[in-house]
Length: 311
Length: 321
Image 1 (tube, rainbow over the protein chains, first blue to last red):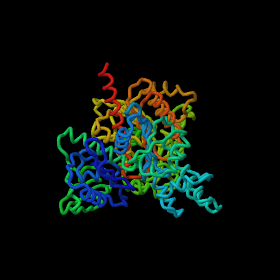
Image 2: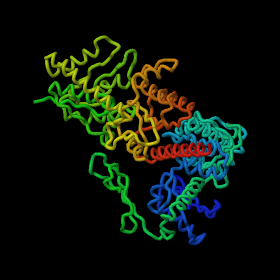
Image 3: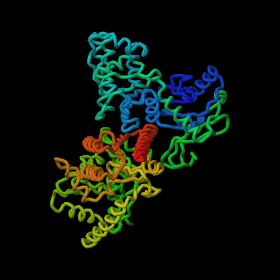
Image 4: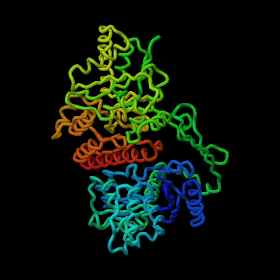
């Protein structure tokens, strides 16, 4: 089982011992990761029954939380997980473009090992959240976004440096009366330009290129990448859960090595988890401590700098 | 009663505090430091400082704000040039003026100008500062000489790889060697850099800092550039990176940079190009006011994973031969 707890989506997948995807659930996190984990695992049990889960891997920015709730064998960062999954999809891959909700990354591989990577800096222009927000503003459903972009014949140019500037630039173009399709395609191109100039700066982007993460669903972005890079961009079938697939593969390997799994069982969705946040007044750092309860029992505490609360 | 001199724990504190302390103590002053940077200091700084400033300057303002009611004097030297034909960062040049402009009801600010581009600047700074406490020039000169000795001792400790903020010591027995670069006020402030040293030590990394590279090496290798770097900090960072890259003695570089730093925008690019040409992994960590560590940790973990992955692969190839 692999879990990828991201800022926007929570993905839970199952793979068998031959790397076939048996179960896949893509949920919107909506700021409630614990509820979403429970919901996903509940659905997992309902749809495939209580399978023998022999290893668990967790990734995504909520990976430590997932580990506490579910009990994972491997807690791995997103970059390694995505690289492992992409290598499973195409062992020759040399460039991975991954665009998620809050992060965008580029991972450079040579001969099957990661040699370089970069992530976006503090700026969110060039991520899924940016597109989400602009779609909302245009009154377009995000799932139609890609198809609309493909219909455009004459894209407008939109500043891609900063999400705030892009937004005001887009509004100006709207006020001038440009077509919605042309604006949408312009946005896709702006995002790609920003990605390549910011995240991909100074990186040697070589074929085969794999494009994954939630934004890979957007055909407009894929087309804009192909236009800009003048190369074919491959989108795996399970592009949206690649992080979880990588984590699952790592979890399986670790569980095999250690001979057991830390998994707490699928029945965990019946349990009640509570989170209590408090500020520690022990010193002037005023750390934000989180306590996670299962029923009345404290599962974990973390968030402190000094180790007073976390073991 | 002995006069108290407040020294804010920010900016060049990490480079010079032993010297300053010794000097003022010898003049019968009592030195008071602000505490290590924490959330309160950050909040004070952000609320007082102009908003375009970089994070370390904002934090410095926080330290001053913390100290201002507790001391008779506040010591904010105006570092203009500390090396011949070189300059400090513009934020340091104007630091006392910035602070005085932004923070009200300050005690007396001691702000000697240190500008080695001018004759006698250092001498005047030492004497004029000393005269606040005593009229005995001999005593002032003596205090200065002793403080310089102490400073040399401190620098020699740094050059041995002792990290001033760290409880754990850097043991130098580990396999992976990582050069941690950046301005001293980012590298040695564990709040700004989210305690990166601790995290690296936990992951069995042997940490190298620019302070461990000799001044000769720094001068020699920074001269490899077609045009000399005229920022002292910049020269040190570039020289350290180039010398270790040329000697192939590091496995990776982590650059800690505060968002919006003008010097770093040039330095990072120069070092990144060199590192890429040498095949050494390079990670840029941009830091600002965020206190959530998830993004920081993800990058760090991925970087360490990547190095491990590479090393394993190298072993694999060598075992075939």
